[in-house]
Length: 406
Ligand SMILES: Cc1ncc(COP(=O)(O)O)c(C=O)c1O
Image (cartoon, rainbow, N blue to C red; front, side, top):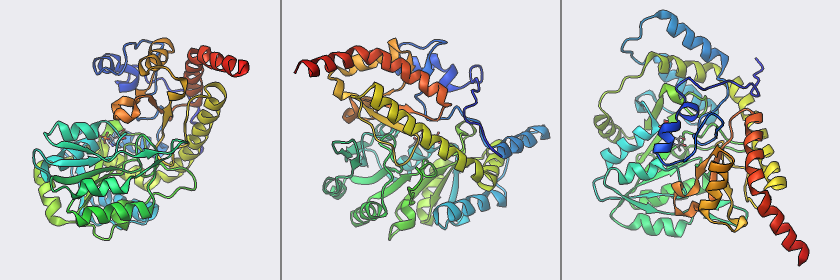
């Protein structure tokens, strides 16, 4: 079936964090302004309809009229195994899979189960903020191996710094974001192998958050860390249907752990977790019948990313941005405008009335950046960008005038 991702679906009044969660996000400090005219492009879910077979699978579950405790049927495991084999050439086994109601939940469990208070945990900032909370919130220490941008805003790993930090005997874990949110990097096999080797050498456990792994650009290849690492017994991988199929509200993450002892410790920390019948039905449906939709979605997202890049080049020329290799977020560098981070925020959030995410939330490295999530119908993205551009026009013209007078 052909999907129309330009369709505008009104999400207000559906308990949507993005569209109904103004009070919560104001309390969280993301924005001061949030009203019926706000365009929210902050949280990573999509304003796009899900695959039709999924809608039908969920209808079938509703029509049953009883929503009791549920078990994971064989089809659940087989759907996961065949998805990773077919899409990523990664052979997962049933007894390596453990369900979690969320990926952030799983990260917290891994930190609690496999490190002790005071341990150092490596992350690569700027990075998805809950990585920091999972570490600091559990009394562990962030060890930052900052990714390094080149002049175009393409980020690379500083391996010397990584090894230096991994060597420290207080460093016991590396929480990796792959593909990387917000920089959009999809790490190469070479990079992954090198990271895995260093961690193996220094006895550092890897937690690979790969929930954006299905969402890479045309021509890009996503390689799971546990597929290429020589030793997989020190790797915990978080996978999910949440991002790929826009079902974050259904809470369905699957953690893959090849080492049975590590898995047992993780499972004990988690306690028995059952999924809802909706999550189970959803996973079986999307991993079995979701590919056609996913291929169409990826084309739509690729086109939107190019649309945003072209728009910025023309109307906000001082914003530096790259097409991300993976994810559907863009990491916009506003430092070229030469104004303060507060002024950048004020123009976007208070004046344009668009909610993005301030870069500093991802680490101090992101001070002059903004993260935008683009999987919304293109008219919504266009309107948000038009509003933001209008608030920066005075700066652009000042700069152009200066250039002319020189
Ligand atoms: C890297 C990363 N991990 C985890 C999550 C959240 O996952 P979950 O909703 O399963 O906790 C996100 C959401 O944006 C993310 O980008």
